[in-house]
Image 1 (cartoon, rainbow, N blue to C red):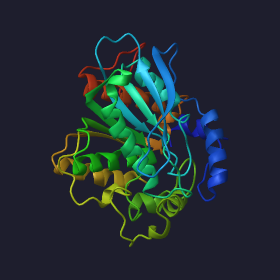
Image 2 (cartoon, rainbow, N blue to C red; image 1 turned 120 degrees about the horizontal axis):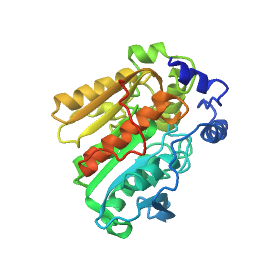
Image 3 (cartoon, helix red, strand yellow; image 1 turned 45 degrees about the horizontal axis):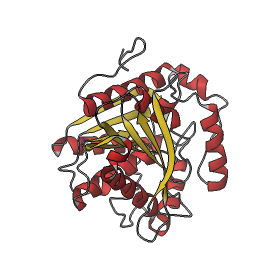
Image 4 (cartoon, rainbow, N blue to C red; image 1 turned 90 degrees about the horizontal axis):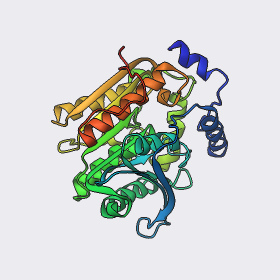
Length: 325
């Protein structure tokens, strides 16, 4: 592992996912401990509200970040937090979303979807898709451009983003322009070399993945179970016609190989796809701002979003480097 990442992780809370109640407390402690992406004096307005949920379901909490000082509608990123479908909330990605809005001119709708095991699939996915449709239909209310709607997220949030893109294509939903998939969870079959290799902490390992799928899928958690692609996007038979994608992959991540496989399928299906594999990085490394790899990964995400949603490179407040420098 990269020495700076290893040093930053030393003594950090280990979330684990075997016990959801303990995991949620540990996730809150981890979020507090991590030096998350922040921006000084972000030029954005932030509003917490609820929107109508899926039919028969409760309202969905969202946090809307509006860039200030723009004269034209801003592109919209609907963002889904990580946490193994079991933990996390709107606070997980607050600094990240604030930067996207205040520094990069992107209106962000961060979604507080329902969590497993109390609410197994398809509850969280239904919340995320409903929020994406809402963002499209109500973009003008928060200064957004309905013609430039993107989805994104990390880990479980990346799975939800990929699943929303599949649903939007198949259901004639919003015409998404981009999907940002950060080390996404994609395949419940767990049958790859990386899944067999990374069985211990630090942040996410095979044991966590097993618990995650058990909580999220309930009785359908077995590798041979018929699992919908909206739960495990790697199960999708056809990836043609999906929006352009960016995939961030960490070398020391049990999800590494399923992410590579999905990225390759996107590419051969004709989906414009940018893939970045980061040696020495673990799952979730881009949230560790005390480490160079974390800072560079976040800077690249900003650049990728600016390029795909604005058509220009990211604005910088200091020198930036590519991860491969």
